[in-house]
Length: 314
Image (cartoon, rainbow, N blue to C red):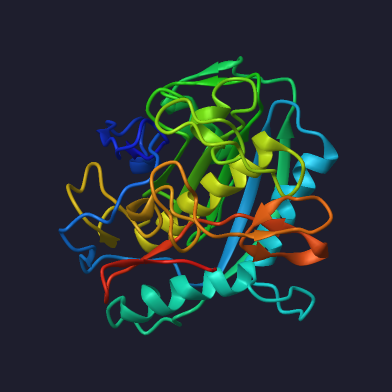
């Protein structure tokens, strides 16, 4: 597995060995703003996820109903069919993945769309595996979510749960289970462990230029940070689920659709500055995409392979 997290102001890459019977995973490194790398992000003739993508959730540890709804609403916003989300919207961001990547993914005969369907949700509030987890246990929890073939299992760990490499080399990770033909994503709540690394720009950065933090759009620095990391990892899981899809750099530690534009959220972004974002006139919160139920979110820029630039929502 490999991982993508936020550290200093350069993108650190770390290859993580595959554990148990799961194939390689890729995670969001601790990094601040970086420019896209000169070597191109290309398609490696492998499989992508498309069509209806059932998503199963395992909540590990204590999450409040409000915290769960922030994340669930984000997932529902990805392929919302309603007109209730004004532009720019989360569904517009997700459709960019379809246009930039899925439409160029070989000739499998499948659709060029990725329709996220929220399936089952299970909770392990008692933390049955303890509050300090290894990557192998993350894989085990992903299996407990029972993702379907062609689907994604999501594992969310609470703010008091420590995960191997969390805050040191990663904020989230995605991988796959070749036995079931499914992918999985893990993201942790960094609120009490490393918000300056995994919840920037909603918290003062741990490293780099010390710019003031932005106001989180849903009022929860840790969970709003989780949404950013979830978006990055889900984009990678769909476009490079089994390690032979879209990526640049070494296969063991690739840059993918969102992680190739780490720290970029709006036009004019530079180290320590997330870019020109929208601001809610009532709350002062910064965001770049509207979601269902009146939600607002911050989603990462996506790398455009045709222009070798980072495509932003605003």
